[in-house]
Amino acid sequence: MSIGDFHLHSTHSDGRLTPAQLAALVHRNGVRYMALTDHDTVAGMGEMREALAAYPEILLIPGVELSVDMGVEVHILGYWVDEHDPDFQRELERFRDGRVGRGREMVTKLRALGMDIAWERVLGIAGDASVGRPHVALALLEKGYVSSVNDAFDRFLANGGPAYVAREKLTPEDAIALIQSAGGVAVVAHPQFIGLPKRSGADGSSPYRDAAYIAERDGALERLAGAGAVGMEVYYKTNTPALIAELAAVAARLGLLPLGGSDYHALGRVDECEPGRIPLPDAAIPPFVQLGEGRPGWRAERA
Image (cartoon, rainbow, N blue to C red):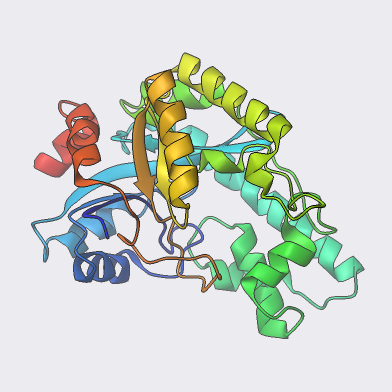
């Protein structure tokens, strides 16, 4: 368990808990430093602040999650951003518009595969949130075409799947510059997924031991550090002690803060863990929190 969790999603993107429900769970699990990092939106910050008024011991770190293209899709977390910055908001709105087109095209592909999925139902599941693949997955689950959200991704929606649709993504340099322009700092999300092979080797070996994968992952992290990233997720979700040690060594070599988060969506996926149920050490939290001092996001939380 950790008192910090810097990767959480709400109903404003593809999470299934409202900010108020998420705040209550965070508090119940003993988290005292949290970041709300919905995809392409900061719309949940106001609701989260209202909910956290009941838990003044919890510090909220304003955040967002962006997708970038490095040959493979990589996610960047932006923290301490000024959610009211008009240029930042315009860019996020453009990204959300792209999500709508992508979601509609995925539904079209699923219908061509014989699945009676209605775009209107996907929108209904998403509600006011930024549409994402989990909403399409939930529509498939609701209709009984898949046994779980994981099954929907594995069979249809994952990269390379028959209903997968790519969307516009920033370069890492542009994404990090956008975060910085809004007063924030950039952190690499779940770096172990960068270029990860789909399956273990023929001998049953872990894909994390594949030499080509390690070279691609570490090369991407070097580029991201050079572009201005200040940290990377080391203590992520269900990472094993061996993988944590390996990623911590890479972070130390590149001068990146070793951070962590549960990436909680409340989707019931087999690898999901609740907020705070990660091995992020308490000692890793103060250096990260100190980065927020004086930034617009810090002022918003300390006002």
